[in-house]
Image 1 (cartoon, rainbow, N blue to C red):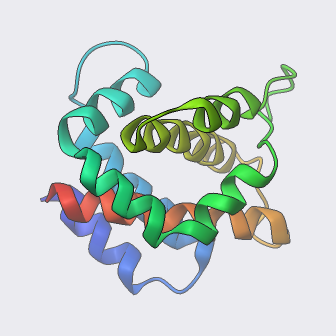
Image 2 (image 1 turned 135 degrees about the vertical axis):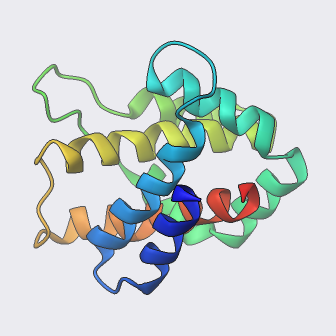
Length: 147
């Protein structure tokens, strides 16, 4: 029920940062108990078991502009470790199936979430707002498919 509550809350929200944050909370509730290990592994495990290849292809077609934005330039890991999402963008481009592409996209979205939740995103910076706008419909779609 918690995932559904966060999903509905995200649907009602107009602010792109809050919308994304609420959707992520719902998604987090869904993947949290999947597998062991770090969150990135749990996310991939969850997607493997809840998103079909056909649905992954539909997502890539439906959210073309959002996907393009998330792939347009790497999202930096704001912890100052010199990392960014470049490897996930590269993996997306090399992937031969749609589900693998979705899993790589969710690694990018996860970085957006990490930066946001650790206070490294600004609710006034256009790039940060656009990253949240581009991430939200993909996260919402997965929640909706999983409820």
